Length: 150
Image 1 (spheres, one colour):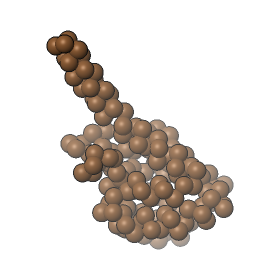
Image 2 (cartoon, rainbow, N blue to C red):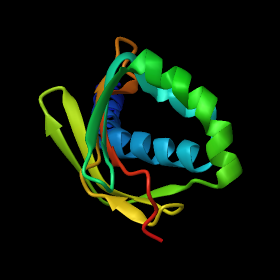
Image 3 (tube, rainbow, N blue to C red):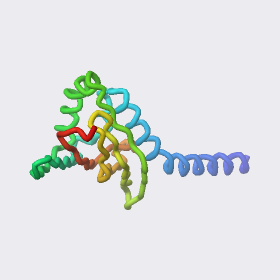
Image 4 (tube, helix red, strand yellow):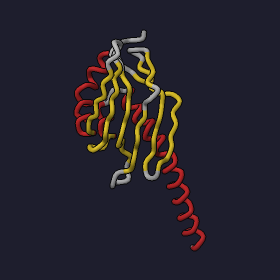
């Protein structure tokens, strides 16, 4: 009986450790799938209090930074996702790295936008567990441009 209980506890700890280590990767993969399928439920992955930073560089030299709350961004996602789908505005990621910083994880990636043929090399998101122990995006940074490099 002791061995069964000890094995059960050991297995649970092992699975929790493995799951905790894999769950950030799985979360980011789910984010990528939802985004790639133009699924507006990707908005549910954001905390209402998240900070979304968008840096835009215009060809004539102007630079603009916009910061939105997670609630604002979620509302915007639901509105723009059908437009992105209609234009087949797909982005893919490469060179993904995940690093732990205390209780949060930073996911950095190169994000390639197929419709405009450019790569955002400054992209990152920060994820943390909410009170229900579910991963949520608490910060995101992206660089955009209005013109196409195609």
